Image (cartoon, rainbow, N blue to C red; front, side, top):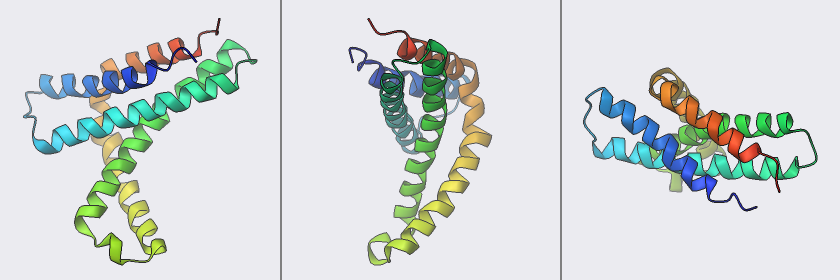
Length: 148
């Protein structure tokens, strides 16, 4: 797995695509925006790591199968993990999670997570489209490229 460096690089790339779009809209970089950028970078790095594992497991399959797996992991992983991180942050700030039973905590995080997923796709997703889609396609291609 010589391509391990692609995981943090994808996290930086996907977060920078959001930051560039945010800057182009002439919006201020508040503490909340920087926290969201950190969540996006972490989610991107984790989803790229999952894509690397998936393509390694599919090494004997055709290149198209590895590309599809990488594309799915990068797209769904980045959006899903960012929404999960935002949901946990909101739930932690607004509920006494340490004092509640686990099943209640999971319901709270799931409820807030679905709302965060909708908000992320409806609002932040449009900021990713121009540059983020190109990054996702390029990194899926690089991750799925046949091993030597």
